[in-house]
Image (cartoon, rainbow, N blue to C red; front, side, top):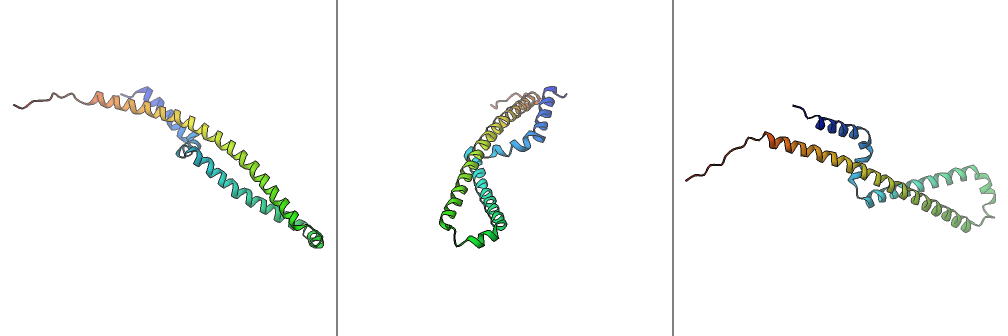
Length: 143
């Protein structure tokens, strides 16, 4: 005979795995510091690549003007200014990523905790069913 409660919980678990679980279960495999650290490392490389590409596009657009006035420019000051802008962008985006991924991690942990509680209920139901189906035997003593 089917246990309706067991079927209901299993349906909820399957639905969770199909929808929310796809984004939350992989997150739960990491420690918080590892998850956020990987996001920050990825952020560093993406910001660096984007900044270099933007600089290349701007330099290409103003190439003629740069070539005409390069002897008049303070290249050291320009380089320092570009590095300062890069560092400011990197810090701002890193703070944003840290906050976003911290929130995402805490939401994932709460969601997965509820999922594991439901799995625990199913496991207890199976243990209870097995205990009911095991035949009781009497132990015999040999003399």
